[in-house]
Length: 92
Image 1 (cartoon, rainbow, N blue to C red):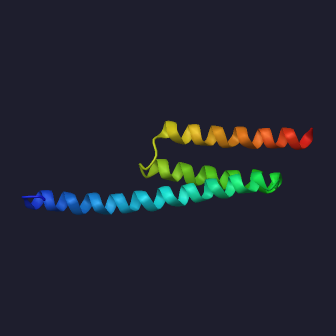
Image 2: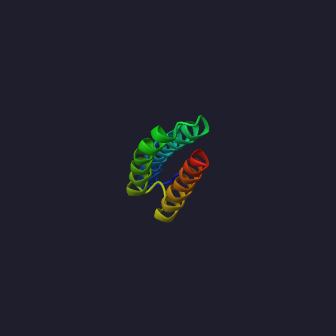
Image 3: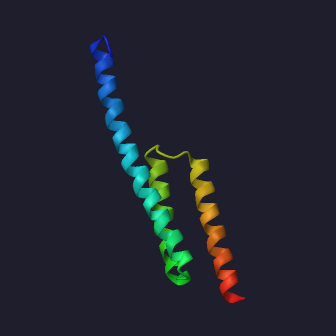
């Protein structure tokens, strides 16, 4: 347990940040799961339109400091690859 006033304040700040980060991370993961569900069900056009919304959420998480920018780039790259593979398999 904290012994000084500043340590107590830092504890409160850390708790607020943890809860904010948890909420942002959870919401971002939900958008990613929705995108993957669209791909699984074969709704390629809807998934392509929804991908920009996923990008927006991931970038917002980066701006809030929840994700590192390289992690965000990796997530976006992998999702784009999945979409491209789905589009290629649909065309074939």
